[in-house]
Length: 481
Image 1 (cartoon, rainbow, N blue to C red):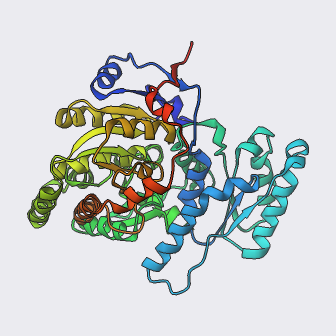
Image 2 (cartoon, one colour):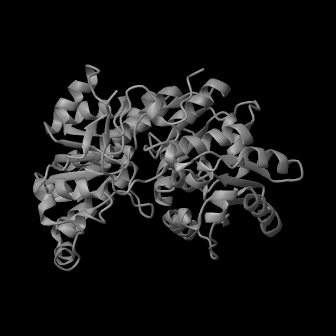
Image 3 (cartoon, rainbow, N blue to C red):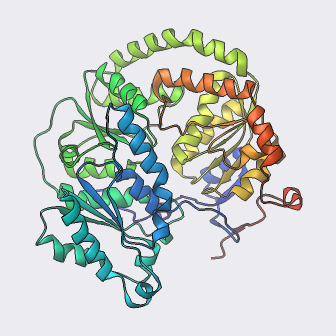
């Protein structure tokens, strides 16, 4: 059985902080000369708790207890929005918000302990909603004061029909926010799957997808699988307890995001003999082909998949050429999660654009594979290994002066540069049709930059002009051993 890592920093050759030129970084990683770095100043980290919450927030018949101060739940607003929008796209006439209860730890609880409030929250979840599952998410505060969420869950489970699932996603444990996905799946394995083994269902595919995947993307992935005679068990977004339990009877597993369920798919292989395709996020021609072929090879349908790929290319290539005529030669800076940043960097190749800089939350073996390919097609470019850090981002972008910024645009949009992102969650971005949507979206933004220009005039960034003359990486230092 593969070794389990509680947080992603514990994986060999995994780095959460760093900077440099892409070719030098590729060389140093290959020769195992990459040094462990840290920031002496940091701004705006995304924590693993919000990724644990967001990955499960749309599960049916569930209640979500956030054992934290009130503020910790604020970041869930985007996941709540995607859940409500997802209901609309799936034809629901009446939308509902997820059932969230916050234990609301205060300064007295930090001194005296917050376990009493957690018990009250569990009882409230049962009495108000009568759910099938009650999830308990730990936080920095409850972790620091060592509230025993496991002991409370075990004690109260005796008198509960609902399954109580404690999740250890304390934000201070890891700077790599994808560790939150691992924590959520680890708890599901322990408390829901429970090592139960059942006969396999031929043709069933575990299709793991985070909340940022739109319903159009889901339909496109399901369409592509159906062309191979496969059907999807779409989990955990818009899933249910029954669908979660069916994960152990699938013929194969795959993920739409390569960092979302990679550790869990390995566990399903080890415990339930379910092979998995660990490829890439299916954004852009190359990645979509790779994702589709990865599954086809496992189920013995590679020849069929190659024919389908040929047909899809023939169908969309004329439209890609039209988009390319609008975008060719434009310089791009890319920022996003590990999966999406590299996916976007490959997507722009389809339109003849050039990569000048890339920001990614983590650099590991998978990132190395992508960097090697990107170096071949783009040459040298700037790499910033950063979990957000907007102060670095705006400095780098202002220096590079790209024609386009792709990523969450809150900060760089104020520089007057055209900005867009592939983190949609509401429209098609994946598969073959997603290429056309994203390409036209990027081209439209490039040709209509008026909003960003006006934003730069009236919405100031909070940094002094002197900061832009400083080295953007001045706060990244080698960790002393």
